[in-house]
Picture (cartoon, rainbow, N blue to C red):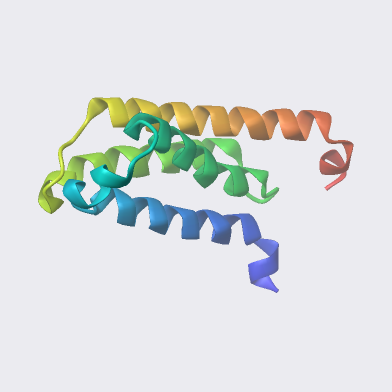
Length: 118
């Protein structure tokens, strides 16, 4: 039952593992398949990472924000170990995705009357 209680956390952990895997994959393996800008993909990925975690009523916004920032910055700085480059633009896109994701959750919780009951 604990998995059901913290389902947002588990979904975010799965998303985080996927983000870290793709962030550390060598650039020549990833670059040929991108349809959108790399920054747009970072932006969407970090929105998708914080949404389930933040929608979970057991996890407050502030820890979700700082965990997301820590993950985004740390993966960028360890990328040179996997033949990738650290890119400040990726960090900005990660930050923007986290911020927009938390804003979306805030709007959902503000307008959703069923969410306020839980």
